[in-house]
Image (cartoon, rainbow, N blue to C red; front, side, top):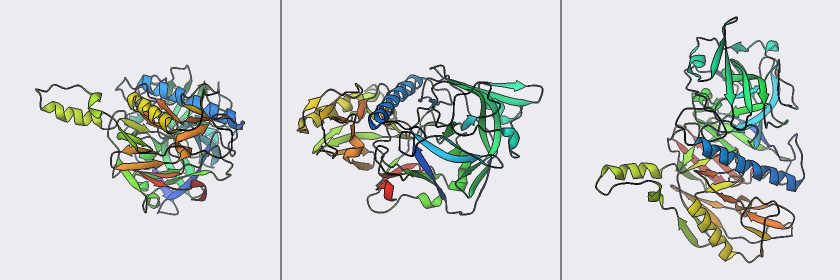
Length: 445
């Protein structure tokens, strides 16, 4: 879900000035929680293997399209794609704590869930949160900094409380109360006074497995930002391949003990760009087999040969040409690079090329066995970091007979999706402004 990227959204300003939530945990070194892919065998929503991959791939196109449409605005906004996220995060809200699942999304900021009274809510399998039963639920007042900073808010003058409204281009929406609440991760980590949305009118393409969104983006209202120095700006995750039969969930880690280090670690800078929700990286090219394919970064901007200052502008434009996103399945490459990769892969494959039975991917091959056939090794060249991808990161079975390249052409900006991140420990250090990758068997981590 994302901000100006993520989707059909009507921008919602979220420049909040708020007090730092109070943080309490028994292990000061950090903590870990489970992530459950919505299409994995642990998910409350189960489908056949072909249905799961079709759903995941289709959501990728929907999400990328929506992100691209919203990339044109420079307004700060809360962008979320209703139920387009891929991984569900288990947490508890309130006192006493009520356990629930919500979409963990590095492309969204505001954390919100459905609340009683549900005037008109989408169906969810977990209990709907009742703020009246929580001793730590506190509505945000109309004259608060948070309420005044939001673009789409209104005031209930009878009780001086602030209401929010998030609208989406696909006619999905969430409307409710802005509040602070205690959020509990795992069994020993409580974060008090977290700013959340408590939705009473929520409709659209939300799935029953989740109750809302957990915002893990880089904006001021995200859960990561609100946790602040308590986690030293550090978090990581290790995504277990969701189409496997492993019963082990993926892990998300927060705090000092999540530093990604050791043999095989590569790191690339996070580029500061708008919207601040997204984590922008710089992709310099890819290698397919032995063939290196570089992006012509200078073509992304125009300049005058007579103006020396333009050199700095060009350099700046070269930075941050791709975002890393946990909520998008496919990897969307810049169009010219995408077709170069297609050509290189096609020249090195020995399998018979076929049309994707799902009609979603462009380059597919006949592959009937359960074992992954030999495919060209692909390396993603980020600035300062060469990430060597495995076959599970670059190819996906869309049916019992088809194996397809898990890349697609970007219509606006590029997205490094979660298939490419599976079986890597991916670490974010927001103090050093880096993302690190370490090859890892996540089911054994």
